[in-house]
Image (cartoon, rainbow, N blue to C red):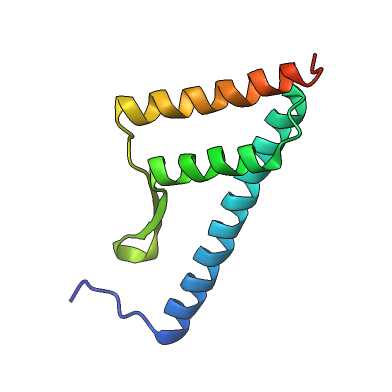
Length: 103
C-alpha cells in the first residue's frame, strides 16, 4: 500500500533529467581538467582526456534512483593502486606543462 505508482511520464522525465545531469557532470569534469591543464601550461588535450577517462573509470559515478523518486549519486572508492595511478597521471600533466615553458 505504501508504494508509489510511477507513471510513464515520471519515468521519462526522470530519465531525461538523469541524462542532463550526467552531461552536466561530464562537462564540469572536462572544464576542471582543461583549467588544470591551462594553469600548468599543458596544452596537450589528449593527455587531459586520457586522465579524465581514467578518473571516470576509477570512480564509476552513477545516478541511482531511490524509493520515493529521489536520486542518489553513487561512486566507487578506487583501490590504492588506482589512486596512485591517477596521482601519477595528474603529476604528469603538471610536469609536462612545466616542460613547455609553463610557470
